[in-house]
Amino acid sequence: MIKKCQVFTPAQNVSELLDYVGYISNLSGKKVIENACGDGNILTEIVRRYIIDALTQNKKIEEIRQGLQSDVYGIEIDEVHYKNCINNLTYVAESFNIFNVKWNVFNGDFLKQNYVNMFDFVIGNPPYITYRDLDDETRNFLRENYISCRHGKFDYCYAFIEASIICLKQTGKLAYLIPSSIFKNVFAQELREMILPSTVKVIDYTTQKLFEKKLTSSAILICHCGEAVSNIVYKDVARNREYQISKNRLVGKWVFSSIAQNSKNKKFGDYFTAAISIATLLNEAYILKNFTEENEYIIIDEYKIERELIRDGVSPRTLNYNKTECILFPYKYDNNKLIRYTQKEFEENFPEATRYLRSYAKELNARKSDKGCEWFEYGRSQALAHLNQPKLLLSTIVTKEVKVYELTKECIPYSGIYIVPKGNCSLKKAKEILESDDFLLYVKGIGINASGSSLRITAVDINNYTL
Image (tube, rainbow, N blue to C red; front, top):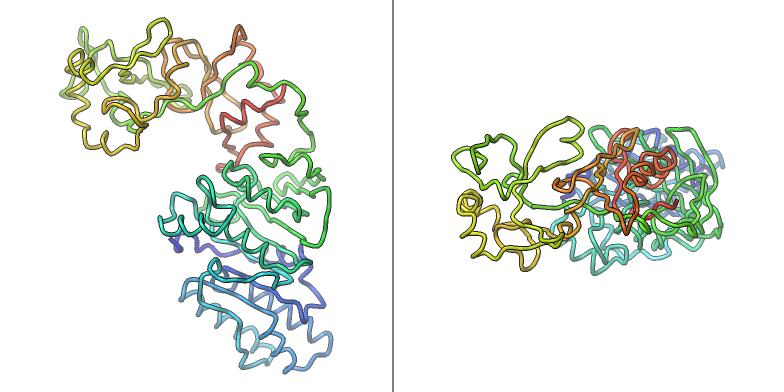
């Protein structure tokens, strides 16, 4: 698990982290920790600054050595990196003729320590590990011990941020290089509420990638525990823009825009419903790409499937590239009401489709499907009740423009976000709204950086857009 996150802080960002919290002068007696220190990229600069500051104040070598031992802390869970860190710190100290420093750097798990109100500075780059990559033991530990990890699919760094805030003194300062997704991820809501009172500045790299071969977009979070400010200074590094945002606006997702949306206005979701498309949980079986047609069947390899079960299957990607696909649709509609077959009905009425799907029996049974789902059905069925009508479709990933596709009543979207009207509202109007410059500006504020200039949005984001 830990090896997935061993990406160390670039030198330029090390200096920025230290500068933003004022770790520059008068450092003696101020305790600082890097709590996932790796090889010591940040700690070595901390030590260098600490020594230079002490020398400018005419402190003696022995006094500086004692100060390093009492003021500078580090912790690293990986033993190899821990040893490298000790060697690197020793090299820096000895370059100033300071020898035999007993470093307060430990080989251990920061999240299992009990540091409370102890440090003047926490400066670091926490491990970037998604919920998907955490083992069950770690998930359970974090859920039981950290408020920010009590619900949903939290990231590992949430606990690091929470623990870092806790270990600061009442006037302590934090500078953390974090994944910018924490500002928008629905599962980071409790973390955002926790850090909002002390947050004073966010330096957002948006489309700039700080770590090679990593898709994660990064930001620097600056917190001052001793300052109660009503605004956050937000800096968009890629666009070279900086402005102040009232904390009162940062409810739910943190939208860093100089233009506020009026919460009293009507929302897109008052007139339309945006929702995630169907989830078969085994597209390999249900999405049919290479097929031929023969009378009342379509032919897939040595199998044939009754045409009655076939619909046009679409995704934003296939529509963008004009690809033709079908989808096996093991349901029917009666007066727009979804009808689900019993196992007996399906197997008796569609013996060829049954034989085809039985060839995927192992994979179908391994799905984590909805409770009560029949073996031949899609793993998730919540979207199906509303799909038997004209609809719109757009991708969850937006790059430069919002592409909206019109779908017929019979089309079944298996990827992306679909839009259906409420009452007599016009889909033409919905398409006009979604393709507008104002909505694109909203996406740039609310979206999570995916890669490059691409942003990830959710159905909830669309429904919450104010008109």
